Every structure is written in C-alpha cells, then in structure tokens.
Image (cartoon, rainbow, N blue to C red):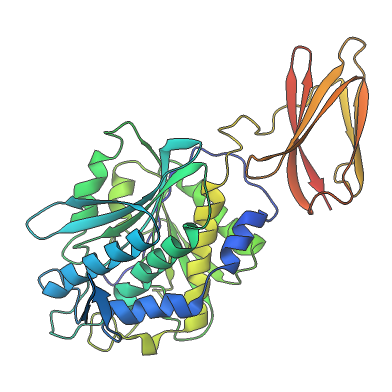
Amino acid sequence: MKKIKLIVIVISLLNVICSAQNPQVQNLLNDVRLDSLTNFVRQLSGEKSVKINGVTDTIKSRHYQTIGNEKAFQFMKQEFIRYGYQIDSFAFNTNGKNLFAIKTGYKYPNRRFMFGAHYDNQPTTTIAPGADDNASGSSTVLEAGRIFSNYNFPYTIVFALWDEEEPGLLGSIAYVPAIGSNNDTLMGYINVDMLGWDGNNDSIADINVRPVANSITLSNRAQSCNSIYNIQLGLHIVNPGNGSTDHAPFWYNNFSAIGIDEEYDNDFNPYWHTPADSLGQFNLSFYQKCSKLAYATLADLAMDTLNTVGISENTFAAQFQLYPNPFTEQITIHSDGQNELIKKVTLFDCTGRIIFEKQVDNHYTTLFMSEIFNNGVYFLKVFTSENSFVKKIIKQ
C-alpha cells in the first residue's frame, strides 16, 4: 500500500436497502473472533510459525522477490482449502500470482461479489513483517473465509488475495480487464488495505469513493451497516478517493467501488514500510471494528436478493389499503376494488426468504404476527387474479 488511502470496491445492481438488521448478518458478525484475526496476522508477519504441507516454517517477508511471498500464497491457499472453498489462481508474470477462493451462490452462481486484499509487502529487508500493510487486510480476508464458510448466499462470493500491489498494482491490473469474459457478472468488489493503526484512538476509518457506476450508493450502504449493526466507527468519506491500491483497476474499468481503511490524512501509521510494522502497533479494537464493517457490508450485499428476485417495493395499487404500518401485532390488507379479490399474500424477509404464504380469496385479510417475527423490515407481496403488488412493512 502506498502512503495514501485505501479503497474498497463493490459493484451492485441492488436498489433496495433494508433499514433494519438482517438477523443472518448479525449472526455472522457475532462469529468474528479477534484472536483468530490476530493469529492470522502473527502467522503472515512471521511472529508465529506456520505449517505448509505439513512442514513447519516461518514467513519472514512477503516481498514479491522473496521466497516468503510463495510461502504466504501456499499458506493462504491451504487455509481456504481447509474451509472447503473451490480454489483458483491467476499467474500474471514469472513470479506474480493472485489467489481466489470461491463460494458458489445457490441462486445466482454467475453473479459475484469479491472481497480482497494484497498480500505482498515492503520493505526489502530480510525481516519485513508488514503487519499493518498488509497482513491486516489479508488476515481480514482469511477470517472472512473462516466465517462465511458457515453460511450460504444466493450470490457467489470470491475472496481475492492480490500479489505485487507494492510495485504498482500489478496483480489486480492484470486481472480486472478479464472480468466478465466467462459470462459472470461482477456485482461488487471490496478491498481492504491497512486496518490496524489508530494512533489517536478516535476510531475513525476512511471510506474512499468516486462517482463511478454505483459507487456512491455502495458508500451509503457501508455507512448504513456501520449504524445498523452498531459497529461504532467514525466514518470519514473521501470523495474523490485515491487510486493507489487494488481497488483502482476496478474503478478504471467502470466498476463500482468504495473503500474502507484506517484514517490516513490525520493519523497515518509511522511504522509503514519499515521492519517495525508489527502487530504490537495495532489498535486491536479498531482493527476488529474495521473488519466487521467490511464483513457487514459484504454480507448485507450478498444476502440482498430483493431487487433480483422481484420483491423490491413497487407502487401499491390505489384500491388497496394496508394498516397499520409500522405494526406491532397484526396488519390488515383491504381491497376497495369490487372485482379485485386478494388471492394470496406472501411475506419475505430482507434476504428474500419466504416467511409464509396465505391463500385468501377475499377483499380483506388480517395477518397476526405478534409472536412469529422479529422486529425489522419485511416485504409483503399481494397477489390478485391479474396483478401483484409489493409493500415494505415494518414490525416494531
């Protein structure tokens, strides 16, 4: 990572953002373990030995011209295999090699979100821990692999680890132009680079964004997740964001992008690119919060099928009344149209999962939901003999 801001990259076709917690996202965030995050940092920065193909070894440097770079690749590949992922790689020059771990979506396998970080580091010294830059980001991706392996998603998620970012974003520059060549749609990429330093303890992180494709909307989604899931970061929105790490090639190829990282303008890590860049310099609480924000944003996007599955809110027909909304115990749907009978009602949660369906064949129906559902946002789809209408409802 150069001495400038990080960027997270995400492309999305989704237009509906739920304004309440998705219980599955919250459950996923509850699985985040700081000891697991920091254990990965220790292993990648050489503070703790690793086993690669059953042999104990130490990653003393991940510089692209050292053997440690290949050791890091093999170690990370081994971890993703252990979690059950399909593995792919992309060699872009004699030594440079990107690593991909793929979790195929159960509904839309050709629509992908990506989450990544670069794993090479500086300086060129024999011992180069590179803990903040960028074992912090690589470890956040590895921890995501551990956690996300326990959940299923309608969209495919690809975890990416880029090589040779330091000499000029070589790994991502080589890869990004080929996106879509296999008929896959990239819906989003999130890149993390330097998440551990918070020297003034103000818990402020940057979101870098540019007005490219749907980037502004994605920045808003990350900000919403910070609030909804009570992550408690102060967010500094940088627009236009810089182009100095692996998000940039996505922007330059017209993909939506946002960025999450530690604050650079007012609190830059003084140990950057030195042998003193170690885990001992981390603000651990801040590191965990940054990782959680990235996870919440990724999971919230990858679980949001509302637009794609056709339950995004549309105009509720004038002859229908729905009350009260918000509701607490029950909600009534009434048709004023003489010939417009309600045939069926379907309720979806924010992930697109069907909660229940009710056959009606009447001008009105009342749904009793006082003990069935958690508080939050749901979508009610009303079917008539000829039409259907969707309305967002809120249980409180």
